[in-house]
Amino acid sequence: MSFAFAHPWALLLALLAIIPLYKSGQKMLTYSCLALLPEDNLSLWIDRGLRFLAGLAALLLALGIAEPYLREQWVEKTGTGAHIVLLVDRSSSMNENFSGTYLGGTAHESKSALASKLMVEFIDRRKHDFFALVAFSATPIYVLPLTQDHEAVRSAVLALGGRGHGITNIAPGLAMALGHFSGQPVTGSRIVLLVSDGAARMEPEIAEALRQQFQDNQTALYWIYLRNPKGGKLTEAPKNPNESTTPEYYLHQYFHSLGVPYQAFEADNTKALQEAIAKVESLENRPLTYREKLPRQDLSGLCYGSALICWIGLLAFQSLEVKAWNI
Image 1 (cartoon, rainbow, N blue to C red):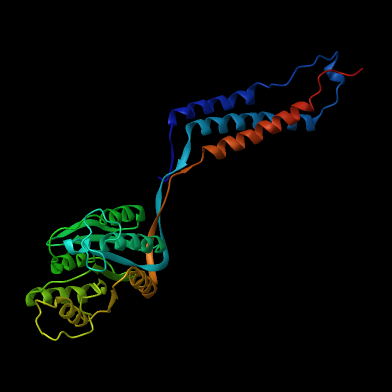
Image 2 (cartoon, rainbow, N blue to C red):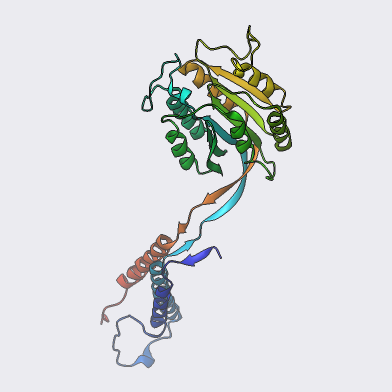
């Protein structure tokens, strides 16, 4: 039942609405011989109407005191958007700025802090999207499930702007991010948005398992690579073909082989990071079925307002009432 009362006991006051039906509030006037008065049907109907109006006003006041309301409910809507899992690097290298200088945990210009700030702006612009959040360094941390509670997502993302710890181990983080889509019906776009400044070597069996997960879940991957200006580019093959010294290049090649939509965005300064996030925002805007929570709706104001209209009507008719016979 979507309709309820905050104070059901107040409905007992509705019994007072019966009183005007049996007792008139009009002033009684004496007349020497009532038989001489003609029958006045109009006045009789006006009297009945006023009694009904008074009873209705009392009933509406009782309902207002009981505070009726519509319960909160979920409605299904169709818009444009995506299911996005934010996979955020929390390793110690994210404490550096884009020049590679270590700034410590409270620096406002660290890559971690800047990425958090811009991701919050990204979240604010994606009104209908579902967001989940996974942080990772040596091990992944499950932060939030897929939700449309953007305020919770904003708070969690801002909390990740602090000091990072440990090394970058991306494989467990990707597995946890993909786990958000396992067994879920496909509606809208599915995206893993990786925000990281590095990578690490991935075992072949783990890489193959992740490839299968990406394909089974029909999930796109976008990587915002926070590159130091002195670091190598993802598109340039290293002179020394050693995966341990240039893991980002080989990870980029692996992502291309996943068989799902993939795109990397290199950002080596704040402006480039803003542009990268803007490009991601423009890529995924497909039809999305989502559920929107409608808050509880208080109806007591409607009851009080209607009762006021009834009382104004009663006062208007009372002003027309005959106070004494004119002889």
